[in-house]
Image (cartoon, rainbow, N blue to C red; front, top):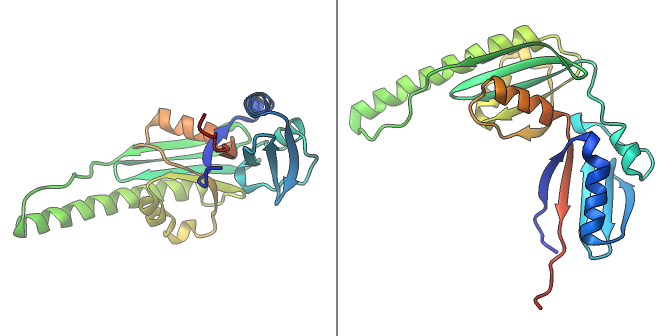
Length: 211
């Protein structure tokens, strides 16, 4: 069996079909509940481990339908996406977006110039990035500062860490899945909101012997 699992995100309404397809590819699959996740092991040795979104634990029956039914989003939660080129913030109640903000900031790319020119360029680029992160933190504090539930993050790890270092955001509960999005735009934010509510599934396919 391959050592490295493949991670996929599956919408709760597609989960039962996903499990049926897994069984169709790999044979009879026994379901168990282990470590707050739903796990399956097929007769060919392939397996999966599925976790609920928003770091929720599962302690129900080893059943696909029962598992998917526990994937409802919280009553109060948020999404924060940050890259050097922009940010996106959303506050949600269940599946409804209450407020959101998307912003772009110009941060210059790298230069091939050397010496003092390169140093000036690097300082200017760092200042632009810092201003972008400060703007993202301002809007995140406005929309998420009193958030009661979790926040799902994505974009660039360093950029998100810079924004969350703002004291106004210190109480936020950051949960997975991490969303590796491009520069945030309105469509990117909408896709991230959808992905945040999906089941996180790690799949290990059994090695197939050579014929």
